[in-house]
Length: 253
Length: 309
Image 1 (cartoon, rainbow over the protein chains, first blue to last red):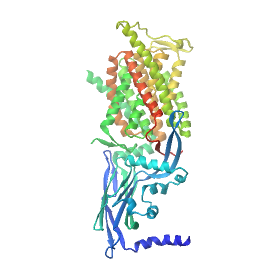
Image 2: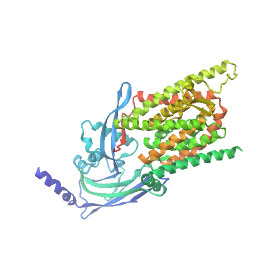
Image 3: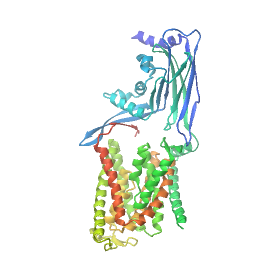
Image 4: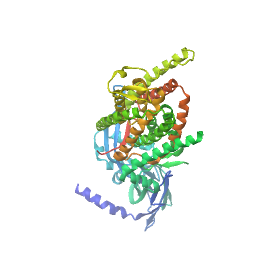
């Protein structure tokens, strides 16, 4: 037991000892959501720095993940009761990412070992379970699978295998398309380089996604001055209703 | 092209599509005197707007199209203000109790089911009743060789025997204030639990229970809806921050124009035709929701943000 803990503590240094490190960049470290925001594409690129010639043997592999801000969720299941479909059971997830994309240089189950997946929480099941303590409950697997299925269907969760381009085991790049229905917050970009299924080095960067301009003004007012916001909404409705009526009266003359 | 990011809903939608939805709902609103809340919510859900925002912002849009519709009716003196105010007093009481029931059902986690069942029950019942009545009226008119049946200013029912009588000049009625108060309360209650203005219940109730002439009903219904939905909008904005002004503006722009056109078309149609069309529309929505409850959904699971109490 103690040996296992010691081994775990030593592992990060052992990782660095292989002498390959990531140097990376992003095409942009902030995304601004304006009124005509229609998604955004982010270029993530980097290089592998090494002191000695590249080791032979297992080829270098790269995995890049982009993770949106997490929110608590309720997942409900319907069952037939007295002829109609009713929500009967539910589980709560403390936090699940609103967006999660994994890009790789190859098939993920071939290039990443199960233990390192668990340790770095790279694939989606680990990313969700890592933060949701309530998901430990019995029978929760179907619920988490359903969450993955639903969010994969609307493109919030993506697995993009073979989408990272790697040149000479040194330069890598990938494009990640952020969807139009983006949630505000910090998006974490993680990069991993691997050999033989083991992670050699990793790096994290953050992309800030913020509303700007009118979008920001409205959002802040709705939350800080809700009564004023509600009254202005009503006033707009009243003015618009009156204007249309007056306009049509003029038209009919 | 024309994509617009909604600041509160946090989704990107097509602006032209929103104008169109607003226009269609406004058109129906002006024609039938219903707010259109029972149509706009399903429309918005369909294009990916979250449910809470769809209900709250829909209410805001209904305010605008109702004002536009009332102003159009006002020129024909087809608004009974006194009746509208009495209905509103009942409505506020009913809406308060409806909201209480709604939050109780939310705490049980069955609010979706509750809302759907209310829709099926009330829309189905009222739609079927209106359809049967107006179909009879249309057939009768046809049998009489197209000659209009003898029209009375209003129909006398049991309602006219109650105490506390009051004169409603615009409706040509001299009846007790109790039935309008009761109708208002029922509609307010349903508005509270279903998140709609309640025009589709108010219109038939005014025709069949209160015996008001159809031409006054639409304007008066819209007049009352302005206040119910206006109240709803502010309550949602304050309590749950779910009114999306950007979304509302587009729906409104389409809606107010639609309401004016709807009013023009409505005037050209006969009262029975108007009622049968409304009945068909109400029935269609009820049947659609009933099918959703009865058929096995393709996805048994649903994901919703957890709202901490």
